[in-house]
Length: 430
Image (tube, rainbow, N blue to C red; front, side, top):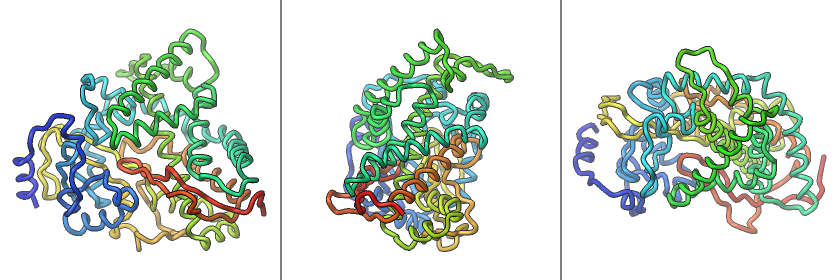
């Protein structure tokens, strides 16, 4: 396998950014030519992961400038620990849009810190977020989230139909984050547009991604400037005026902009994808839905299985040096997909991993990542997921996927429903 991949590197052509973005032909061998933009991969990547894991567990592709794709649980966790060898300064495997201004290493690090940062910057920027996202701290958003879920359902329950993605799951995290950072809840719709462009349309339209990113950063920068002059009782103000007992800490407006960028982009898309995937599953599996209706104490266990089975996020790393790892030669500058979703389907760690088992007892998944970059917002994500699913089932206990329009998934590095037509009896409630 090593010789094969080395030969691929030799044969790679130096391509312009325009050429790198061009779609290739259909994938013929997922172990040597995977494509995260492939429609089949987006709709159901599990069979592709299984093929990679069996034939070449650290697969390689030349598409999108080239990347590696580890699919075994142990490999992914070990790579997550290798922060000296694999940098987090570029967490998207997609190359930048043509003519994108080059960023310095420091600018890359703080672009969405702490997820884009390596130690020591990672250490103190993560510390800035931890107090607000500790288990007890996030409970302050419980009532707001529950009320929001009811308001959203009020808007469509009498019609007997909704788009479970657009009308519900995609509305919750943007409004919670807007509320936390102290901006108008009406910005939630704009957040959705920006996030879809940065993480969704980015798979096919790098120019739209760059435009959305610049607009988002401009908005955050204006909000940071406002709070600096007129402090408010919100998380954004707390971040701006935070003092840290860390020798490397340097809390500048640019750092706060980057952290807020992370909250809006990563904190929104990942959670709405998880909520949407859970609703999609329940629309397709009435037995699981009935068990949640009959066994209220089962929901926390089910949430962990939703997270494992439909784990939405695949981060990327950049090799800082040549690395020999489990039979492959990763070269300095190569990108690596930290495929946490594939790791969650590894049969070496999960019994019948491709079966959804709603009461799975042993479930030490890595849906939130692993190592120092494990998701700092996992407690809030669980709260939002649990509240959203519980309230939806309370108000609409019986629903199914409709054929009035095609179901649509977003994929690539964040997978989840984007269009999900649901039908149910109008005004129903238990």
